[in-house]
Image 1 (tube, helix red, strand yellow):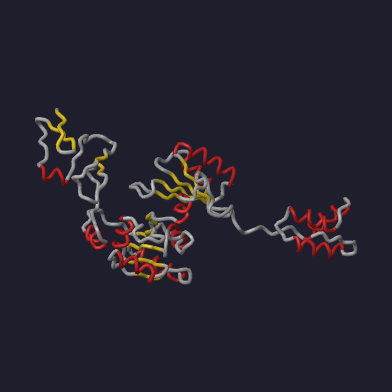
Image 2 (image 1 turned 180 degrees about the vertical axis):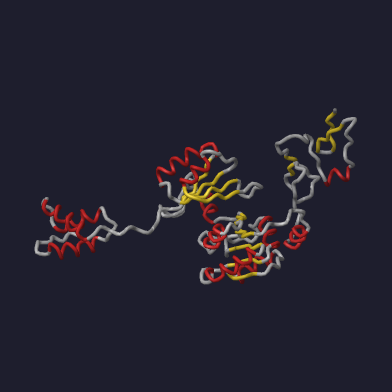
Length: 350
């Protein structure tokens, strides 16, 4: 077996392997090491001008489209398998129309209907890529009414794509309630990743990126968990957040074995401690509830105030001390103190 050099590209030749003819070789480079699991990068001036890198793959698909119309034609002739019915959450550009994925375009073209926050705004994107799929308005003022209409379409086996004006639906945009409704009805919810203003800004900020928070403690918590550490993570999460907190395990997103598991942390422990999942895991835990329990009763507050006053604190200082450990406003406790202990001298130090 001999390695020969043919133009700038190494070719493999042997008595049982005949090199491709010259004209076929330029159009279809073939792998020198056909059994290798690692991609071999090929730099060549002989490849079409749109290619800068060629990765050896027997199944790879490439595009040489110059215009949206050419891209639309290539998508029309794509040999990808048909999409399955379900709700597709499609990420769209946050400004530049070229920041959209081929997968997003294929979904938008194949869908039976596209739900759009602003049909006029989204129409520009669809027109740019020559996509004719019907648009249906879906925004915060009509999402409750539209939800049942959309649900019937999904139950009838239709493909519904949801887009927002920019970025990913459901992230500071309509879509969360519809995704939850579909999940509750066991209707597939398929995320189609796209640009994110959060990550885009963070990546170029020059600030630390190993940990960051989008909002606060009441926000959904998101973690990247290696599969072999999932058991330990669930034990720690149960201790920190409580076993009744709702959570979601997103596994192998955008891949063949994509999975979204939903339940409580306690149920997650029961499910995954016995059967460790494989693949890349993104774990989400709901934030702390913003609803608060009822505050202490008036009699409880009165007793605390009385004890502090008996210890020698002024009325206003007693109010401060009681209020420091309560979610109640100090003004409400102060009003109670005046009603109950108004005969005493109050030193105002607010």
